[in-house]
Amino acid sequence: HLQFVESGGGVVQNGGSLRLSCAVPGFDLDNYAIGWFHQAPGKERKGVSCISRTSDLKNAADSVKGRFTLSRDNAGKTVYLQMNSLKPEDTGVYYCAPCWLHTLALVDTPQTGFRSWGQGTQVTVSS
Image (cartoon, rainbow, N blue to C red; front, top):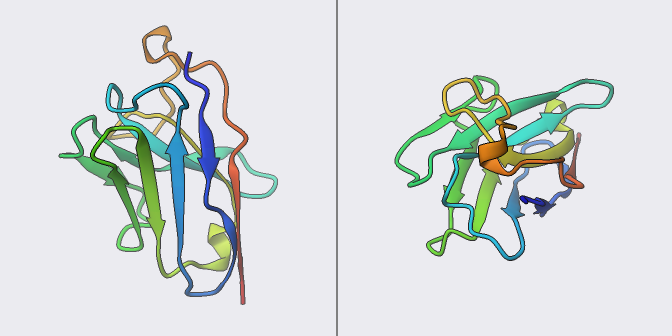
């Protein structure tokens, strides 16, 4: 089923920007709401953003509102997370997965095809 591949992470200074990409090789992602999840060191994954199938609805955690923007490519193959004004507390591994739009929680029902997390992509924000 869905085997997510995340990319685009890196090391940036405080206030910098990164653009993360999420894709499932061989599949389109426009059948599901897709979101990004942040796992800070030693902590559980937390949903930070979620975009609807058609991109008409979006939601984000309060901690990233105004800084992170979720989008899809026109072909429905990739979901992006534009991260601006990065802060040290944004440091961690970022994963993408199906999401509940209003709670930002993981959707791991059989209907979504989710079986496991991808490898994630590391974001490190230094001062």
